[in-house]
Length: 111
Length: 182
Image (cartoon, rainbow over all chains, first blue to last red; front, side, top):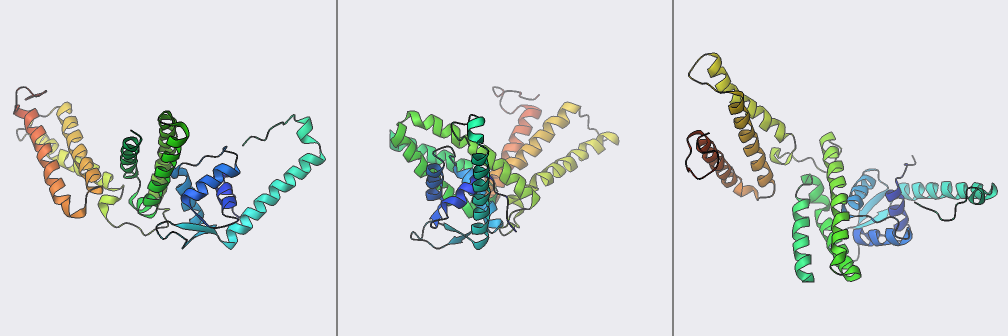
């Protein structure tokens, strides 16, 4: 079953798509990927991580630094991220086909 | 100056973390402290001391939202972690304190009903209720952040404070203290 993702969950999954990371690395990657539009505090970050562990979208794994907890995508997380990206991709394609970016006057994508 | 700011901020954040449900704190507390600490250092490097204000504003909003969500989740029993069997660590302990307060207050109420020499007004019941519930809650909150072996000591200290305040309000132990013998 594909899980509906919140904005922070989407960015967290995206940050883990390339490699496993610990909390602080995830936070920095989300900040960078979103062009500083999504800044996660420790409360929001670990609240999302807790929910995603529960939904089995991510899992805790051993990493380079034994003092830190590392997280990586599960198969379910990979599928959810892929499906979400596909949905965005389809929406953008459609918007381009209908020339919506021009007609709506969208000059900058806001999150 | 920066080191002092970092140390003090970390202490305050430690205190904020103590308000999270025990199981959540156990699972993520250390990691949250690390993330907080690193972000704080980064904010200081980026915007010096002035960055601390906006950093703390963001942190307080983030912690407030997260505390609410985690406590609601904890009350729903949605935690995936091992359930804590220690009553002190559970939020339903406050219901027990309220029930205990009600039971203790029913003693003077019954005594009044059976005319056994008690003559309490609504204000007396209110003050006593606030005292009992307050003492119970203070004990629980302190006991949660104190090692288990010191719980008896905490209980004795809270009981002593409760009795002292009560006796003072009743007969006025020290005249210069407020509400003596009121």
